[in-house]
Length: 340
Image (cartoon, rainbow, N blue to C red):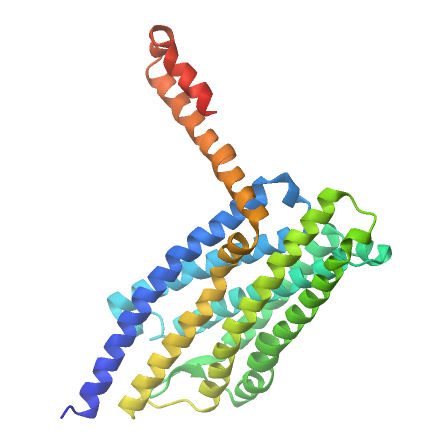
């Protein structure tokens, strides 16, 4: 029979491998997803003055920062072990500070999108005019400042414990995290806000044809409302399991002196973390699956804008390297013009 230490070692080894490969897979899909989101929402003039598109852009930037940080931690951990980041108090604090900043930013940008769509699709003219892009930017930047300050203060309460690892060391902050941060600020509050306002926005958009709005505006509101609603459904389903686990883990930390139980807890944490990470990659894929109009917009940006610019740039470089081709083989210039 295998001893408890050998069983725990195998579980911990599997957990490390699972975290490494799952993080790399999620990282790949996440970078593609958020980069394409940024490309579409920045390139198309239709979205440049849209408040909801602005919130999705901030969400995508936050997700990219989180993925770069997460994959860096994963690589360092796989090379140097747990002591690379979590072995020092500074590394322990930075890990949670950056994670909380990106997580709260992503969660509440989803909420901002849902709230914005409720006001944008409301039948009352004064409510539609109340929310402007300037006001939306002001609230978004103010909230990000609050998130940074909050995360620095809360993340500073994490310390290395000999048998428990990187955990909250202060009893007051444990109580705060247990009864407010995870269940409310980072849990049920964004879930309730996003769910409620996305449902209300969906109800508004069903009657949007009665409003005296340009047809382009009506189509855009319907498109974004449907995209936000599906994003919120995925957001709720992926966030709830992780929040539930974190509340339990903070209240009942398992000591490393119980190797098998500790190894199982680490594996469970890795699984719930990977489920939660899907929240940071899924937005683009949801948009492209459930919105045929968004698929056409992505195709427009990739084929008619980016690809043509790329081919024009390549042809321009070739013409600078081989200037005689312009004189001897005019067909090459014609091919370039066709690709533009």
